[in-house]
Every structure is written in structure tokens, then in C-alpha cells.
Image (tube, rainbow, N blue to C red; front, side):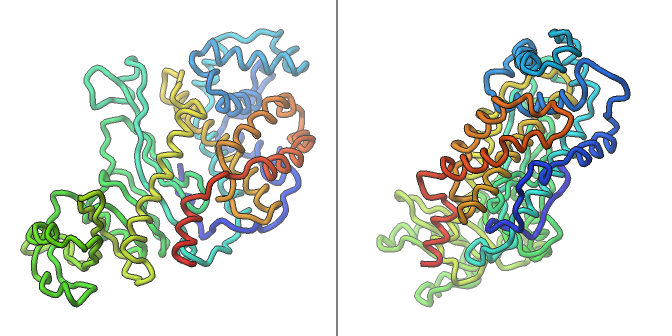
Length: 444
């Protein structure tokens, strides 16, 4: 996925999107087909247009992707309810026809559709949130996830386990937009640190897992004028150069390993805020002062590092910021299980990439509907549940799947306004979103 960073946060919509064509028009879709060289040059039983929508909508049904036969069953179900498509196919669709489409329709088309819709989504949302995360142009959670594949794909997607195959998804997930803004798909043996996710734009916040730990990464984020929060690596023994509380002045000049026993004796101390130098080399390449936050949790001290020195962000807030990284784990669970990415059926890289981006496109379409529902209610997208909303979107779209195969996508306007209205009424969260909860505690 191309880097789609943008200075946009959640909030009120920029303008009213009253038609599905405002999101994706026929001309825009045709341009994408032409751009990626997949436009049909002759009449086919399964055109690129029909195949694209069928594979995207199939991502919403966890049961249809267990095997190629199940996927074809889903396609045939759509054909039955659409007479002209049924006439073209003769009511039949072979495994060969679907397999060919998974092979000869470039997966770059689906990535292009995703990036195009992501651009529309970002323009829909207007930067109005000036508190907490609004202090950053965007806030990203960064992590990776592994998907097991069949053994036959070992030569394409190698695994860390012998005679097995797996692919790795390295993702940068926007906590403001609640969507993926960058993706790297690689074999399972590729190290997380090879994922390049830092943008040139300043004032971004990165919540990073230990798998990406490196002084080079920290320096890159700092030089870009951005911020990070991550756990302290166990092998790192930082030097204390400054303390926020004068009563701890005696700790200056010591390394963390030297004060661990002392911390155990401080029964009333539950948090500590220090300025440190991370490198222990005599001539370190990384000389920047870094903030080290320690919190006592269930009798164990946990340490986090950041270059956020703003006093507004207390020690507990730094920890809670890092805890927001869990949102990307929820996203992976949604993509892999709810949208059935765990059941990849393709046996080649092109088909696998199509399935991945088909799931991402359906996820993004749901997010767009949520954004429109947020506009209707005057609330932020964080007040809506993706799980509840996606069930509503899936039900509406699958029940009206035939509308995607008419000559114009304008046919979707028959259900578009109704769908937005239903999600605005029934898609709200029952519990407070972690981002909203933390913002309220930071800005009482």
C-alpha cells in the first residue's frame, strides 16, 4: 500500500455525501481499471467489474472462503439474482474461470481501489479535534501479524518453521481514522524492523511494538519532528541524566540496573519519571535525551520510553497512550477472522494479495458508512462500533448485491441513504472508546 498519510483527524464531515457516486463513480472505477490494465477488451462470463465486486463482497462472509468451491457457491448465488449476469454465464461458473481471474487480474488494481477510497475517506473527515490526539496531526499504532498458509506456498511465502508457509502483515494503523494507512505484505521470516513506516511529515505519534526497536528508528522519528512511545527493551540499561522530582536527584548519573533494588524498597512509590540516555556505548551514535517512565503494576515495574516531554502527559498518560496500541490488534482480529482473511484460498501471490485487499476494501467501505452516520448524528467515528456497523452494512449489501451489477453504481443510491440512516441509529458503541476515554481523562 502506498503511503497515504494526511493531516486529517476524526470529526465533522467536510461536506455531505448524498450519493454512492460521491464515494466512487463509474468513471472513477473505469479509470482505475484502465490505469492498472485490467479493463475487459471483450465480453466475458465473469467481467473484471463483476469479479471485483464479488470478491470484495465475499470478504464480508466468513463462511464463503473456506475453499474455492465455497467461493464459487457465493458467486453463483449472486448470479442467480441477477438475470443479465445469469444469461452471460448460463447459470454456471467453473473453478477455472474464478481461478483465472485470481491469477490474471492484477492485485495492484485492488490496492489502487483501496488507496482511492482512502483518499475520499480522508477528505470526508475534517480536522476538528483539538484536544489530546488532536495535538498530533495523526497517531499511529504499528505492529505485525502472521497468517499461516498451505505448505505448497513455501517457495513464495517462507515461514520461520521448516516445511511450512506463512505471510506477514506489517501495518501502520491510524487511531484517528481507524483504518490502515500503510501495509507491507511479506514472507513470515522477514523481520519487523525492515518495515518502513515513518512519514516525512512532522507531528505524528507512533506507538511501536518492541519488534521494531532500534536507535535508528527513534532517530528517524525525532528528525522528522514526530513522537514515539514504546516499551523499554530488557537488554537496554539507560543512564539517568535528569529527574522530574528533586527528591530523586541522587539517581542522576546511575544506570537503571543500579536503582532496581532501590525501587523495590520504595513501598509508596508507584511511578517514576526520568530523563535518560539509552546508549551505553562510549561513543554513542544516538545521543538524544529520552524520557523514561516507570510504573509499578502488580508488584512489577514496567518501563516505557518516549520523546514526549510535554508536562500535560503525566507518567500514567504515557502508559495509557501505549495501551492504545491494542487497537491494531483488534483491527488484525477483524480483518483475519470477521472478514475471513484467515481463510485464504488462493495458491499464488497475486490471488492472495487480491483477497487481502478485498477484505481491506470492505473494511474501508464500512468505515466510510460510519463516517457518514457520524455526520448525521453530529458525533465522532469513535462513538460507533465497527462490529455492529459491519453487520448492518453486510446485511444491506448482500441483500442488494444485484445493484452492483447494473450499468451504473448510481443504482446503489436505492439503499445508500437508508444504510447510512440505519447505521446512525443502530451502529453506536455500547461502551466508551479507549481513545475517547483517555481524552476525557486528559481534558477533564
